[in-house]
Image (cartoon, rainbow, N blue to C red):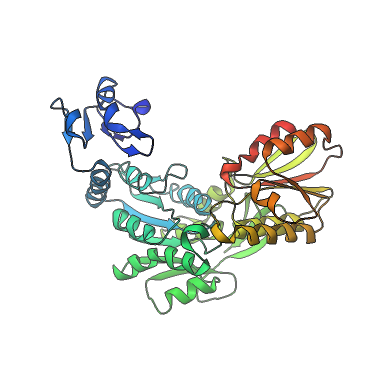
Length: 411
């Protein structure tokens, strides 16, 4: 076992003294030993004071190299997963399905960066058969680097959307950056799962042979029927109807990917159905909450222009009256922030909801006829003087930094 946090030391683990902008893990090395660590990995000579301190050139590089070494000495097959939207939900669904027949591990939460990926790889045990590794990125070459660490046997990209435009520069940059997973898999003759109805995925993979896809219409691929989403996604697979607990048509492809991968690994369809139907979203991801007579869709974990558009259109299509929308700022959009927030404001206005509240500095800067608030606190002040009187259906969505789940305390 390894740890990078002295508050989470387990007996005889190895502590890696990572550095950050505001901390130096080397200063906590001795504390880690006192708390039960067997060894500490450091990269500053002055802290090398016992035989249990191991001095290396760079702690982070050592962690990453150890993770790759461990990955190559395990029998587990590795599935790499990235994309603009739906990564974590898809990862959880894949894990739920595969764990019906295999011993699996998967990325915890969204620990999907240059530190999280190595830590997940190092959690692979001797009896682990499949590891599902989520990989996130906000700039070019990051997925390529994470792929070199994880060295996946299989890969899947959920989609290409307008996320992290500040780092990627454009949607073309997003496609190029996320496709670095394809580049690794193809160059190493590995297998790729795909949504065959996504024209970008189909074009990118072209005539590549080792690909396995799902499709609604193309009989060349595994057929999965979209039954509907009102509000929960329902699918038809072979002779089985699957009723998920995930809202929104945008979750169809997340479910379909897990079904396809389960089918590839010979998980019985009845077990796939059980896994999908038993999965309940959490951590502010498309959660259904009933409070004070309101039916609330809480989707406050993340937001970008693509996911915002999908959420608004899905909410409009759902049954019910008195639909009220709370939208928080979308982050990491760079120079496109103004136009993208304006576009979402216009869409929310055009869809004709009962009321729309736009929260955050970006939304507050645009010229909108909707209610705008510079901060969460300004919204709370307004709601305290103008409470929601009529019970209704509420959509709450915004970037993680907006923490819009706090709204539950004022509804």
